[in-house]
Amino acid sequence: MNIKQLKGKPNYNQEKFSGYILWKESNGFHLRWRTKKWKKSSFQGTLTYQDKIMITKKDNIQNDDTLKKAGKKTIEWDVKGQDQMIGFNFLTPKSFTLDLRINNKKVKSKEIYFGPKMQNPEENPFIIDQPPKKKILKPTYEPEPEPTYEPEPEPTYEPEPEPTYEPEPEPTYEPESEPTYEPEEGHKLESEILEEEKEEKTPDERISNWLKQLKEHRK
Image (cartoon, rainbow, N blue to C red; front, side):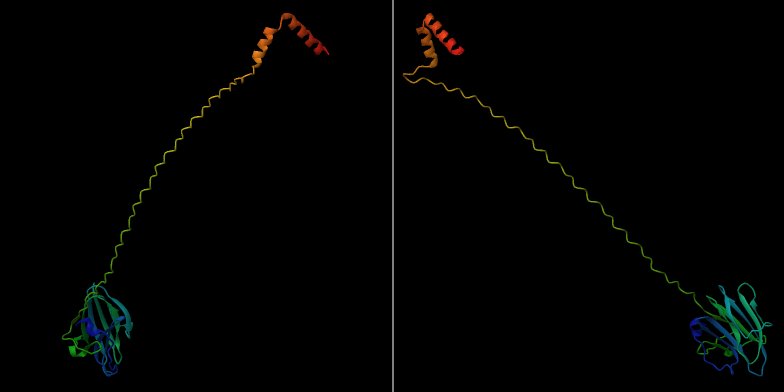
């Protein structure tokens, strides 16, 4: 029996129901059983699971009833009841097998119901095939490599050669030649006059002139 056939709560009359019923909701599997009002019965069963199991709820199971682990991967129960729905809820991730009995006798398949359509299994015991959930692989994102920037080479500046100034040659001044004056015709130079006077005056005349000059100086 595929797990898809069990999904959804069945719509049935609990007061008239007799037998076992199994369905699955979001909170797990629900297994319930009941007999007619006038008939008190004991219910036995075995649930064999592949991986692990957790019983999440007990419904009308009393302290003197038995619902326990029996072996490594087996749950067993022995519960008495009449005129009420009895059972438990459980969670298990993989396929499991159910073997159902009433008053220690194997229950006929027509007294076992599945899911909202109230289907019957082909036989008892029967397997509920629950394939493992596929793991949704999260996409892995590889970070893009960060761009590598090569620094641009710094510009190299060659210093301009400093200008060289050659000093201008100092001007050379040639002294101007002193003007030479040539006497005009009819004029004599002072030196020539003196020379003439020297030649003309006698020694006595010179002494006489000198004395005159001395007297004038004393005055």
